[in-house]
Image (tube, rainbow, N blue to C red; front, side, top):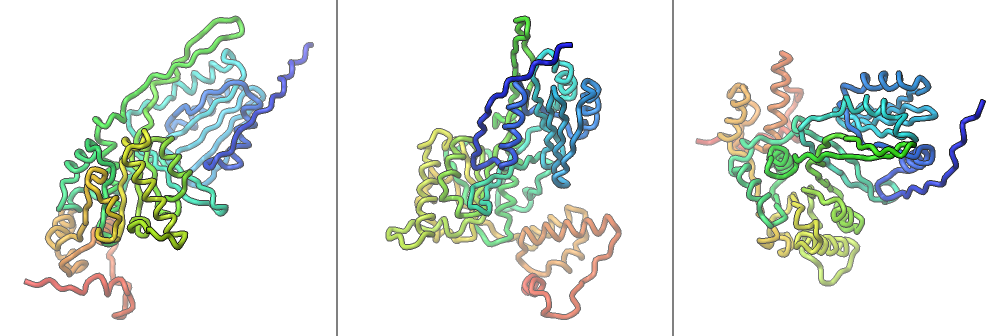
Length: 418
């Protein structure tokens, strides 16, 4: 009886960059050292996961299943034997699964590949891939990716912006050579939600060239020298790529701007910028001055199209600052598409939204007895009122004494006049 020849040991170097964890590096090195070949990023629906795994395990009875439920939003499952390593990585919203299949022989792996291929996700739905940038405890730049489809967005309907034709504005913004849309206004008027509404627009807009499909072919040669082609699938385009940043320190980081040039994002969403938009300082005296100057310099260079990807990327910037406080170079028409100073809703505008949701106007007056109503207040109150109505719950005030709730004392001081 001949023993199976041992696979020669090879040394695999996997580089750790700013976006990978030590665990990911070790796992990649392990898989690539043990197996010669791989199919990466095969997609199936999450609901098909428990149909695919038993079929694969029937092919190789030696496969062992290992489950790693990281949290309620994220599962990581491994099937492993001497001949195969298959990983099942759930998207954060648990709607889809990404499969990586490591093996040593195309011929022997074909049956498993065909099983995965038979469940291949062929949905036409385009998604938004949001990369949220942050610093870890060692001040290393990191990014968490979150996949969203239309149903996942908590965006404001156009009625929340009666002073804008959002559809027309977004159409002109995507067609324009200008890169920046600046949203100003007090907290709660819907600046961040307007950015979400723009992402939803991009998903709806078929002319934005995001839903094109591409046929991916891989070829291989077996042990006898025969060459074959495998249709890996007609894969989805990447969808809408969005970078989200709320930490102003990141905006002065060269690694962040380098990633924008490499990834070619469709939208960069800079949320709640205050200090970074102030005019550049000639006599730099603090580290904050250095960071601010560096951010504006990078933003201007990027949006002027100096870097090839810069002229393809749109920026939505939100701030609580008045326009008069902002560096004039950022405001320049041609670079900036428009500067919008969002306002609260008037009584009639808010009441119309309330009634359109099937709610009683008298109940609205009890909640909002004032002339100006923040979009955020209206949206959250509508959501709670509908939930209570659907569950037949009678909501009552939990405040027993005037002056205890700071929020309620601010919310309704201004009576409606004739």
